[in-house]
Amino acid sequence: MTSSARPADPAGTAARPPLNRRLAEFGTTIFAEMSALALRTGSINLGQGFPDTDGPEEIREAAVRALRDGRGNQYPPGPGVPELRAAVTAHQLRRYGLTFDPDTEVLVTAGATEAIAAALLGLLEPGDEVVALEPYYDSYAACVAMAGGRRVPVTLRPHEGRFRLDLDELRAAVTDRTRLLLINTPHNPTGTVLTRAELTAIAELAVERDLLVVTDEVYEHLVFDDAEHLPLATFPGMRDRTVTIGSAGKTFSFTGWKVGWITAPRELVSAVRSAKQYLTYVASGPFQYAVAEALRLPDSYFDEFRADMRAKRDLLAGGLERAGFKVFRPAGTYFITTDIRPLGESDGFAFCRSLPEHCGVVAIPNAVFYDHREQGAPFVRFAFCKRTGVLEEAARRLKTLGA
Image (cartoon, rainbow, N blue to C red; front, side, top):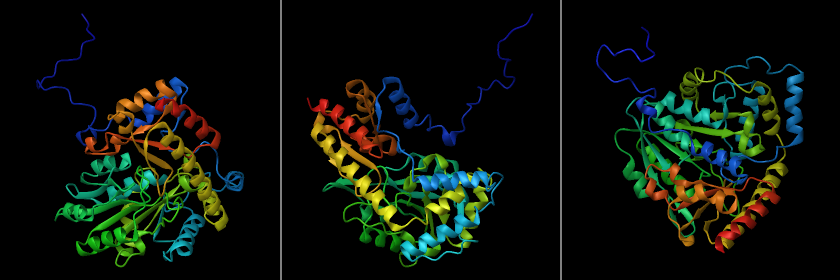
């Protein structure tokens, strides 16, 4: 007699769960859920942060040329192709006066997400504390968990139209177990750009407590109005303790190419590479050559890109205000955080799940970016990196909420 039943457990123990306990709190991302909802309902997707147009034609042609010339069709060098590493160092020098050795102080990664993962895996010991600015990009929490670290959130809170960092709270969060500060500016999802005074205080704290810093600066070229992007590595005492993360996806609208990089002193790059080589090993070979050309584009490209995004920010922000949202107009990134309480709502998850049915627009509840979910409950994020006509239609649909 045969049976399809599971064999008895001789030890009498319950079956092991398939997911390890470090990742047990992380399921399918909210982005997958909301993108699927957008497809199912035919809604305008202002949730996930990717453009709906491609980047410069000459950079696309550079990728095609690399493919046809046989450059990058096989494994590229582990640190990244020399042309891209040289372009990254030239960019850092021209923009910020930072000098790096392209052979030992640059590492090309499969996008900024891998850079974050490799940095945390390479720099943390199990039990190390990581202080991060909450709300934060969702991969931060997962990567800290995979590295065996303990995340310690310091919450940015709304004040006078922007989300602000409480420097006293930041200082109080650092303990003898703190290994690393994880900083993001321009900040996703709030759109805050940390000020010179805030960055000075962060730098002084890092030096005083001998902390490493990983700083995610992928939106460095998307700052608006009178805001200024100031790399943390430029502050006194910071170059030798900072891993700076950059990315081509946000700056050149090629998010699918997955080309990111870190710049850091030799010993930190070596530590990050020790982890990175066992993740993707290498990636995006032909695209690396194209991104090298993109980083050498004239200043006019970056100026026009920023002006276009600022106009789109203002278009969507105006539509959201007319719909009844309280809008935190961002100083950077391509995301707008809103408060739904003026609409009589307080649960961002429920609001975002019902929004497509109500008016055919998808957004993301900010609570997914918080450890303290209650802090983010009334906030909702919209992406404005879309075509002008799409944003105009989204604003028209959202107007029905006010009615």
